[in-house]
Amino acid sequence: MKDRLTDALYGLGWSAVKKLPEPVAVRLGQRIADETWKRRGKGVLRLEANLARVVPDASPRRLAELSRTGMRSYLRYWMESFRLPAWSPERIESGFDVKDAHYLVDGLAEGRGVVLALPHMGNYDLAGAWVTTHLGVPFTTVAERLKPESLYDRFVAYREGLGMEVLPHQGGSAFGTLSRRLRSGGLVCLVADRDLSASGVEVSFFGERAKMPAGPAALALQTGALLLPVTLWYDESPVMRGRVHPPVEVPGDGNRAERTAVMTQEVADAFASGIAEHPEDWHMLQRLWLADLDRGPGSPGTPGSPGSPGSPGMEKP
Picture 1 (cartoon, rainbow, N blue to C red):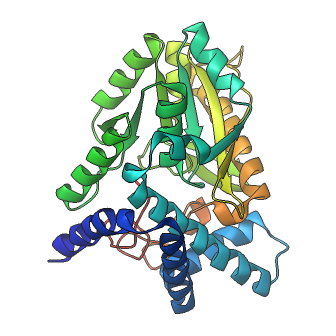
Picture 2 (tube, rainbow, N blue to C red; picture 1 turned 180 degrees about the vertical axis):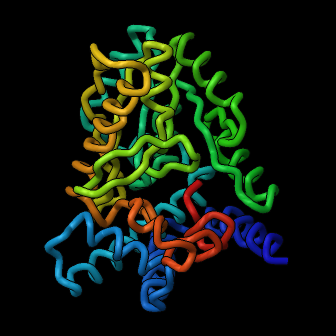
């Protein structure tokens, strides 16, 4: 029953919200965000706990302000995503302004393949739609399997409709497919600030231990592809902003695991720089740092709580 309700809610969002005038959708998203924030559920509390590490000198009042703005940013992502299938190519192109896109353009022109690694910031679906529309470049990505299966199918159909090739996160075949795409000079985009496997790389993130996926660095090492971190954020305008960070270089020394670890740390550092500048646009409503994961299932942000996989709290897959 819960799975059917979750699927129905997402279906309602895609069918109804995309028909709303944009100003109405914006106000609706802000209202939902404010009401969710006022309830002080586990997702909001987890967001505040994560932001406390990003802005360690923030007062409780400042953290509350950040989490409120963060929930508005999070719901802006959802309102935009529900509406993206109805956006014209012109609206998509005008909706994203990115700095230093030449790293991406030049890398693709060289034909060596490019891996874009992103954190849960802003709206990476809009950024992806901009790539396929403005640059005319298709790309491959990976999506976490959600329950119910029909919900996962909705997300796959949605992203494929925006010009993306979507592979399931589970299963060893994804890495091989991504490698082939890169060796042929293609583009791969991966959300890479939260490890969903047992093979993550330990990094220092805002001064504490966390694990992040090894995939972006491992793919770059194996295929010779360019590895580019990307961060996204919103301002008060209808336009999302972004930055393509300089390429992560392959270390000259060390075995494969050691070089993967060094490169993953550089990706984490790039993420941290962007998140520190725009903490309210980092939509991390789950536990991330190892110290929090060690506390067990009672902590905010555990699976089944709002904002976590398997719940109707709208996890960004």
